[in-house]
Amino acid sequence: MTRLSRRAFALGTAATLIGTTKATVSRAQARPKIRIGSLTLPVFAPIIVNIMKARGFDTKNGFDADVQVYPSFSAYYAGLATGEIDTLIGGPTYFQKLRLEGVPLKIIATGATLADLVIVSKDPAIKSLADLKGKQLAADMGSGQFQILSICARSNKIDLAKDMTLVNANFAVARAQLAAGRVDAAMLIEPIATMMIKDDPAVKIVFNANDAWKQLTGGHGWELVYAMREDTIKKTPDAPVKFIAALQDVTSYLRSDPDGADRIAVDTVKLPPGVLKEAVLAKRWEFDAKPAWGDERKGIWDTFERAVTAGFHPRLPDQAIIYAP
Image 1 (tube, rainbow, N blue to C red):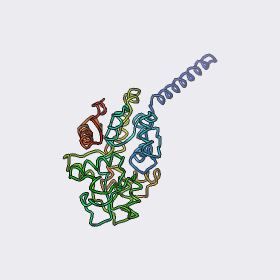
Image 2 (cartoon, one colour):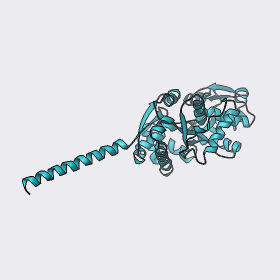
Image 3 (cartoon, rainbow, N blue to C red):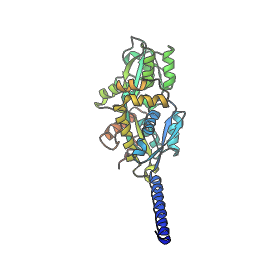
Image 4 (cartoon, rainbow, N blue to C red):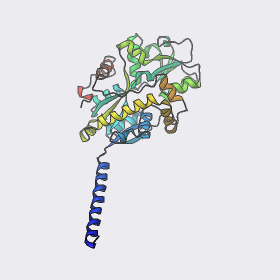
């Protein structure tokens, strides 16, 4: 090879390498970042996103999940309202409230079924919601779950505020109140309910919101759904579709490998081994991500209507609250 040809070869190789490097950088830059809200509590929000990250379902579906962890529910929802994060899982009636207050969000997907919401008691005489009349119930009265419970109770002519003594307590405190015998029952979510049942065999489920909702509406309902900010969707139009695809991968993984999901929960949110698996197999911890604009739209909107009828919100949100591609 002559000196001239060697020089030409070297320049050609360098150009190829530069081109390859630029292409690699371009591909990396093309993958958008979706900022996801999470919590320090061992509940749906952190467990789902931790599985997504641990299994690489975000990058598989063309985005990077940037997780922002909050110490409380108020800070968590505030992060979405202020634009600090792009998306999170929450109660449909709570998103209804935020939309009515002007927060630019759209519900993009379903998440947790109402099987997650239960009332537990240690009193063998308490076997249903009606048996709590005249008793003490610990419940987070500011939560979307409490609104769902109230709607179900009213359908059975039970007024929670009048027929029983309510003790306002978040889920962790409600569990502690019942364990200490300070209340007769507690409103809990998974996997907190399963942890309490495993700790004390006397604790029994006396109300399951999924069963009550089916009796009321003839269909299933959603305790938690995913909302995404409108400005995020405008900036990255395919963000909802990519994110839902990753959520559906999480759904499939939970069903096919509950042992693996359990290990991730143990490693990340420090759940005791076996708790998540037991809740999943008992079909109380049910995660099912579906597009909100499909068949599930009717059920979500029905929840909005019932929340207005129950007096939790002054009016329905605009139709655009539910995303449609």
